Length: 364
Ligand code: SF4
Image 1 (cartoon, protein in one colour):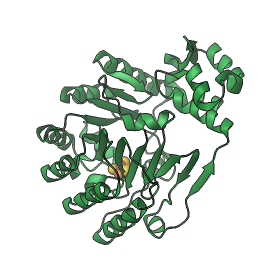
Image 2 (cartoon, helix red, strand yellow; image 1 turned 90 degrees about the vertical axis):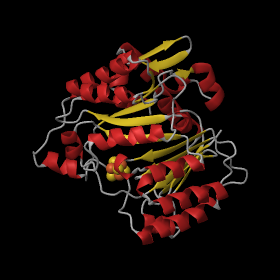
Image 3 (cartoon, protein in one colour; image 1 turned 45 degrees about the vertical axis):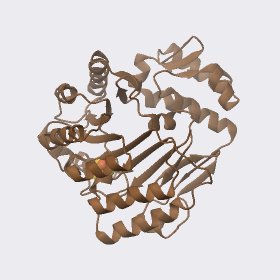
Image 4 (cartoon, protein in one colour; image 1 turned 60 degrees about the horizontal axis):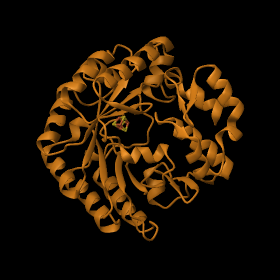
């Protein structure tokens, strides 16, 4: 069953580490965005009825209540939402209030992913976040009070000066259904990378990053969370079904500037800039992968899932045997203790999980 992603390209302010596409919000830009989104919905394939919807960004909840309601109403009018079982909206603590939460609930949104990153105000300031730890806790409690029973928190590890143990403790005390924990990366062109290049701040060394990855895994598994993707943990049954589409063989369509789609054997990306996308500029990229390239990609995406890649299923879905595709590399990575194959299923080992990008680079 397919998914639908909607990119809302506005943020109240750019975070110091972020290289996602987002722009400041103003009334004219919001109007341009909603009109173009309405047009883009008109181009959805006949019969398209997603099972999952994910509104991300950017910061969807930076939209004022009237525009947020227009966005949701537009989706309800233009998309067949009759089969939706999971509808997520990303939110930033400082942009949420009871009115917006009620608008989301009223439209059918049943899951919120709250960008907390840390419960340390010093770390939040370092990251350029707009909210405080107290505001994050208040936003979470407000969501609960308004009836949301499926809330995910995003945290960040490997932050200079941060303490992931304390952040995990504070997060667990709230009782979320889902936790995503990503390592801070210093992306070129961001203010954070410029500070590093100027010698003002240093990335944590690899050993410390690995230690934190293990702390996250052990703490959350110990707290009863299911580690189901490299950076994602859920209470059993609360895995994000939309994100599983990205790592499985699923198809999805993306709307909005910079949104990506994977549909009918093709992959494409919408123009990144709001003005270009709204003006109907050509796609940023549009490719039809040959069957072998698709199979290699499916292997790498599939290995992000902790349950791994079943050999028989992989063959049925892609037409390829993964040993025929990447046998030498798989054997070599297994000798290094990064991959293991058991019961006809290939998966990352504990060691491989911690250095997954290096493993994937060998397999792609
Ligand atoms: S709120 Fe999210 S999308 Fe916006 S700048 Fe910060 S990290 Fe990037």
